[in-house]
Image (cartoon, rainbow, N blue to C red; front, side, top):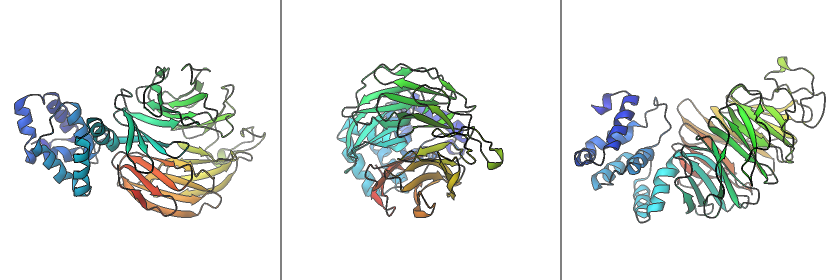
Length: 428
């Protein structure tokens, strides 16, 4: 009967089963593969407005203490065979069972990744998960190096290495920022508290002394990394949730992107707004001192939820809807684009040398795609290629520009050849 209920009812039923899984009769029922298979599959239904994956169900069962009975394991493998190579999955489960901490991170954290970042050296990849955990992986082998299962009490929405690679900062749905030792994943300070809603984006300043954060409370805060204290009053101006914050390469300005669409610039040294928000369309433009670097310029096309500074600080790329645009920060004019994507833009980034722009997007069927353009021409260089399926997507260029790491709700962690789009590593 469970399979015929509404998705939301089934989630409540599953929660109830998990809550009482300590009872023998519940364990016996859950061990029946004819019951388990639809139970595992139900959370994959597209109309559920909850980000889950096949293994997210496993994570919940483990978290609530449900034993990994042989019948249950068999049912999971049978169900998973539709989406993963059976032998690879079996091998991973066997390997993880021999190491409890690895088991938790690989089967609870990795399947529901929300944030990903390369270390400055390119030797490590850090990820943050739906469950609030932090993990660090070897970028060459994708072996798990360190992790923190109880990092936050809600999902990790953004993650960043400090410029020197010694620390990792995470911004969470619990409204806090935490800083961790990059080697051990141990907390090095108390949580930074101040936002009244979930944190969607964080960024280290180029000198590593500050962290900027953007939140669902529509504000941007700047924090002293050593003290965990806000150094300015919150930046206010956006009318909807802030989803992207970036420091300019010289650290003098902070750009923020929001669901209200116009991108705003702030003085990174004083906390003051550099200008009014940049207008959405050419017919809304008017002369004013919009540019952080010059006066009396008009920004006619700079808007979007997601944004990226070019490494030389001369341009800014923004994503909104199914378009990527590049504007000059000196003239305020659209110089490249709009470049069309295969779905709604989820992420935008420049390659380390500034010659390419990569974007991740999700189409109407929840398939995720990666596409790379020439930053100066707007012409497609690689892709688009299908990178999995899911409801969110984040990318990170390796410092040498040769690889692109992706994280998503259902596709786990993948590493791609930036020149060809070929999969370098199978999903972690």
